[in-house]
Length: 234
Image: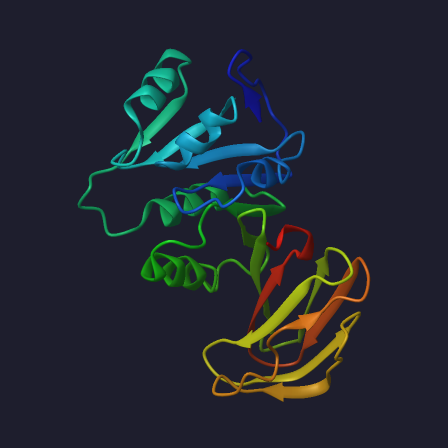
């Protein structure tokens, strides 16, 4: 992460943060997601959010159709790398940014500003996270209010993830692409003990965290986890 006045040099990046052009309900909550040492990628108009916070990305990726003129001027003046694609591309800007990020082999990727707004874009962004080449990397969508990610089970073994927040936070477990078997939770108000969740049922929706962390395990399937921070609710 670099400020406008100080370009970064030789950044070690255990985590990559991609800023997208979706809705950000609370810009300061989004800023609070950033950590020292993050490598920042702007997916097209995500650069507008970063510049509003006084931060420059390492690179901008996309067709630039959503980048404000003032933002583009500041980026070029600061000699930020820009990887521009044709508007006729087959992938979304977020998918291109994620592909670039994965090539850098980070320990995790956080995509900020990819929720809300257009439903089709939100569903597409969630679907991107199901790419079978991603299981070795922790990839999450977050807007400062909600974080969304998958728990997946491979053919060889089950999966487990941890949710970090605070007591009262809402956690919903949603089966994706079919039933999810062996769902077991710890740290939630209504625990599950090796149950099967079905896409046609709302069994896993609106659970609550009892403390600062909760765990979810599954033995088979793909489980979407939505964590809404209670402190951010209106």
